[in-house]
Length: 443
Image 1 (cartoon, rainbow, N blue to C red):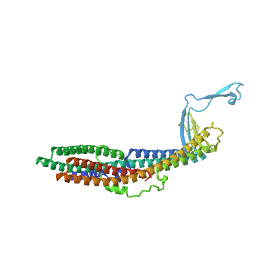
Image 2 (image 1 turned 180 degrees about the vertical axis):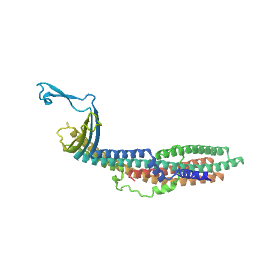
Image 3 (image 1 turned 90 degrees about the vertical axis):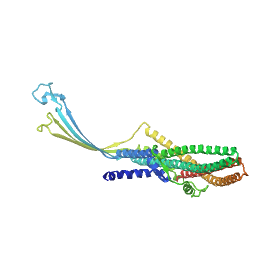
Image 4 (image 1 turned 60 degrees about the vertical axis):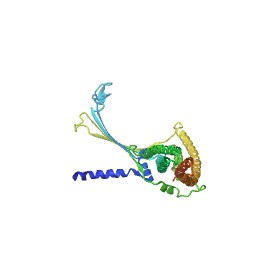
């Protein structure tokens, strides 16, 4: 009993992990936003931008340094002085050697410095904050791309499963017809050719089902890849195709509706890039303004022949505080070149912004047209499917009653399968068109 109680938490965890293997579309997207490698790289870039901002901030934060130096002189430096300084009776021109210090010495020092005024640093700090925001917006664009990729992969599975469902139904119906025709043939009321045609159709459908099973496996692998899900683990989906179609098609689409460029994170990133280029121009111009720094230091110096002999000389202190004014006079045209490059970058951003607006306008308009066309295609193919099903049912009845040929049945069968494929393809195109439209509009 105790052993079972000890294993019970692991059992619960295992059941929870198993439950997590089935995903709705929203759950698959949320999983991808946490596990996809593109999203992880985008988050790393944001963290790096945060680090760069902190690094730049540190330039303006006061600095304090402390140091302790120890010196030992096996041969103490000496210098010459006139001997008369020591002995007034010494002859002229004679010199004496005096040590320039002690054998051992120690210096303890503390220094502080701070920026009082630096216009270029103040403007640059704002630029760094904008850069951090720019990287975050670029990360949002990566999220939108991942959402679109996961959605399309998820929809591809649903359509493949729908095709499989239809194909299995066709195989079941055809198998039943084949058995009935074979029985009629054995009783002498049908030709061998009729049986062979049905058998060929049955074999072809079986092969198509095997291909479709492999396609579904590939589609699941693609979904796992887009989600960042372990490729070796199994996964399943829970959403219903009809439910998603109703969800995706609930919103009405107008061809001439206004386009909101700000709904796209890429456009916000371009605007931030434009503002960043303007700030850089201003920052480089501020480099012509003088910089004021403050500094101060205090040190204690000890000189002794025996470092631990307190009877010898003690500590000698020195302190200094001051201001430093740095006036830029001529930098070899460095700032002028940087301003020129920043202006070029700003002009480039203007072109990119205009190009994005034109491209988004084209993308949204074409996506709206494609979505409306897909809606019409679904409606048309659905009617064609109903018609093909009626024709197929009628030819089946005529064949069973002996007034129709197996050739008519085969032709109606092909038309039905074609209509079924056209309908499911139209459904997929409708869902993909809606996903593309949402992405184009920044939804």
